Length: 466
Ligand code: NAD
Image (cartoon, rainbow, N blue to C red):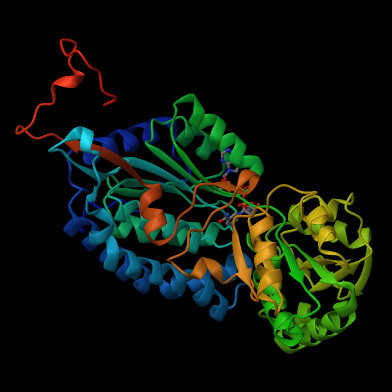
């Protein structure tokens, strides 16, 4: 694949004709059967792995430029995760791809049945800016493992990363197999008119609706990885020292611009003060006494989001933090008390380093607060009592989450990662990603040895065979 004809990626100017041609070529390439063998898929995963390693420094620099991400965070939550996912898929793709035998009822005497995974075909992957490497590479790994071709569209709001990713893809794959198309909403809209076999979208629920509407016109299946308000519940029997560290880590990494970040805190009234004191100390130990001045503290992606998040600060009492810097677009880690469920900060996904703190005394109050909003992408519960943990996990609908930790569940490739309701449709990571990009054919193989007469019109007795 790696010859001198490689494209350097499809530039922002991608007009309708260029996109038509690209998708046409990918469909032909897919139909040629080239992407199907397991050897091919494993080779492409190795190629991707090597490319990510080769571009590691460039990706780190781009993430610093786009979001001021520090290298440690860029590696742990972007590049390292993507490399792990590639390795995991490469190791397991043969097993995932094997047809699986299932039982056959006696009424089909002599027959055998199996489920045969089939690639969906030519797929479109659209990504957001907040983890612009991880959230492009991870779906691509799933698509490659399942034997698809891919057109990807990174976010225009992380332009440096989008450019490096496009070079990485252009230098590694032929465009008829995998191509990166850069651009904003208008390019997305052009792509969404194409006859893809699957659309994998990560981003806001608002745009998720647009994507699903466009897909519905052609009955294209979708995976939607969206957002929402993810609660973090801290019970009175929790280990507060650990809870404080893990909540601050999950909320303040990437300055809160994480889809699975704890959106708000629901803490038992008896331990609120102790928890907030420990969290304040944790912020200081992680980011120093003036986080805004910390060169490694992430900035807010653009002015619009910055102003939106700063607007939340007036909706409650600032218990900690609250400093802002309009020029650097930085907002210090902030705890906000006294907010109402009707305020914007409790109705919209915050996506920034502002943490509303609500209290409860009875468990019923937790359900009422969480269920005042749509089903969240994540939920976190801190408690030393397994019965309380199980009750919360069992009673509240949410995408996925952690007990006694935050944001680390997407790092386990054995767990499905996805939302529910307005926080998403479908899931991925590991085999779940392979499934998202596969169709499962149900095949019943009949034998010549028996031919039960009951089903035919000339038999006296009928039998439910189909
Ligand atoms: P966004 O929806 O604004 O943009 C995502 C992608 O959609 C971009 O590539 C953009 O170019 C494209 N787009 C924008 N407008 C479009 C339109 N009208 N038609 C077609 N495409 C369009 O999202 P964002 O601001 O980049 O990301 C933030 C949101 O994403 C948050 O809600 C967050 O929770 C969510 N998110 C979810 C996950 C997850 O895995 N579930 C991960 C990261 C972010």
